[in-house]
Length: 202
Image 1 (cartoon, rainbow, N blue to C red):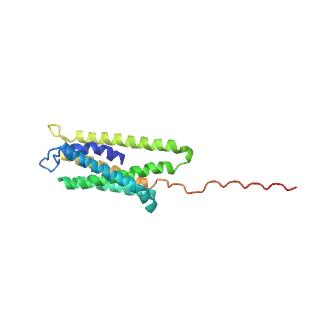
Image 2: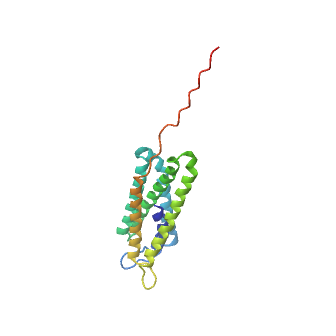
Image 3: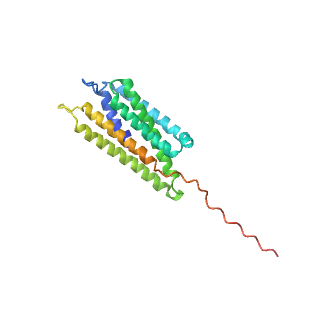
């Protein structure tokens, strides 16, 4: 989801601020409206991360990861199909924000729970590196898709936006599939203390 979450942020602001073209791409919003929509995405992301522990207890960690990936894919596909008005766009963007909060909260929790205590720091570091790498790759891929679909004036075409959203949806679905193979937290009890030998009687 980091692929789509960070890569989408830049695309989100550009699309919202672009003047509408003849094919229904672009919303022509001002900076205040763009900021409010971005804030709404962050707010639902916070809600998703807050609900993640409760959902994990209810349906399990792997199911939460898979649900987050599927929800993210649904949000991006919604943007592919419905993007010509603010309510349509906002619906898809909020689903993406919610899914991002769920997915990232679940991966950070599991990166601690599925390893031995001595490996916690390493596991957390690898998870954060993976999130950062996914975000960097996402931004690069979206930039490449945009650069290959531009008008003579340098503006991104509607096809460029659709390809970017489709790529994000595909990666989110891939994340949901990988989540099914995520190792569940160990519930095995720790080693029992050795019994204290009985003292010798006189």
